[in-house]
Length: 433
Image (cartoon, rainbow, N blue to C red):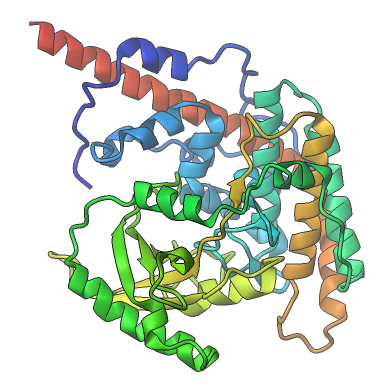
């Protein structure tokens, strides 16, 4: 991408506050001890967690830059693809004999969503088949950064013990149904079930589009046929678009092409309209520790069906022409919004360490159930046992890698902030000359 234009609206003072490193621990040194040579940190690998702000165009989404600079976890979310590569290079050789499983692919605390109908890790854009440690390490680093944000430094291992306890329990009992954590019920108690409010809020997120509306309507007719095959009682008019716009929410996916659509629903009355989101399906970087990096819908739809506690409604896909300057068409996966939906925030959602530990346990269960589900294996009972055995053998090594990559994520975030601040200072000097 071209170098991004400087953002005159963001003041130097704001940037220095947003990127304050006060209270952050020093990152681990490159020689941090590990239980095996294969896990000893490599400075060249660690440095690759840094991405330059100059490589992205934030001009159309300055809020994204603010969220990245607000704390290490926002930066961690933004570099999810880079992080997967580094984790794969650090651990891939150790897991080469473990069967591929269903991966969420971007497991972290702020992917945990709560609705009136369900809960758990959502957002399956990076779902694929691969080595289970990618989900373990990604979620573990998120827990580390959450503990840092909430002043619970030193409690990361206790929270991750709960994660692994849930993971092993689910591998032992594929039929378990854990009760929702107390934090989930507390958040649900604030829900209103106000459908009109959902519709109004969604319209507020819709932004002007580069694509002609006719292209989206054409693609939606294909999607409507998919839904009719699954549910013959749904006529094409159910999915007729009344309003549509681009969507710029998110962090890791903020620069992807996304749309919000208000559709007519069961009747012509506005009261039963529904909101659909269409998200671009991107190819993943080809890594030795993942099996499918393609942009085909099956990668996402399979992961969603096998890992989600409660699947989204009206899940399907649509295809649209490429934008000017490209030669290939784009695929998007589609799902409906619920009336009430809240994603966890590492800064605002947790009232105590127990809240964090209960979510860690619940995510461990979700991944323990979802990782082996539907995976072909000579004996379906052996795959969960093999996963449990390998994970227990490597759990201490995994903890060390989580510690190290969390520290290196903080360091990379600090470098990112320093680069942005330096560019802003230089710009202001040029303006003043």
